[in-house]
Length: 205
View 1 (tube, rainbow, N blue to C red):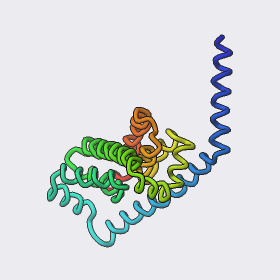
View 2: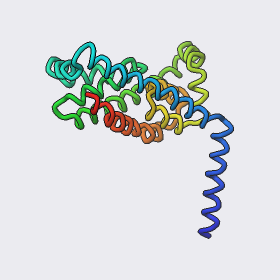
View 3: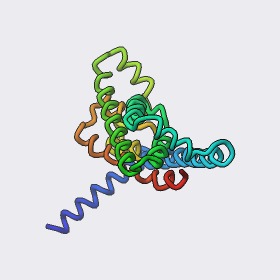
View 4: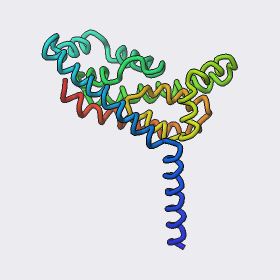
């Protein structure tokens, strides 16, 4: 009985592997990873160059923490994450690194990003109720929506972990009515992204 169950599980995994291979999921992830590396290298390089030749980044971040209340910075970040990720999260991670409690503020940033994704998800759901807007977004985000329909939760995992706008993935998930409970679970990987990136960025600042 156990052998039969193991065999069924292996067959299912093999079928999933074949499906993701034939539909181009692995190729998509690889291309996304390659695209992700360049912005990170550019950001770290720019941070180093600015710090050495233009201004003291550490002093600038300290000034920001002294000038603006944490809830103001977190509020701006939440709005950014709700509206297509307008500001790179790396800047806010650097800010958290110079705050009084880096780990706490990093967790709050991750939470703001996670909640911003939920707002984007319901924006996607809302879009489906306005025919004209729905049609326009279906055209504008055709590739993203098509990929979300094909790969579902795995695409949400990629969006949560890689430096691509999580809001876009969340809106697409809302448009196709991806199960909300599953979206919440996969979206939790957003926390892992912030903690992993902080290991590099905290060292830089």
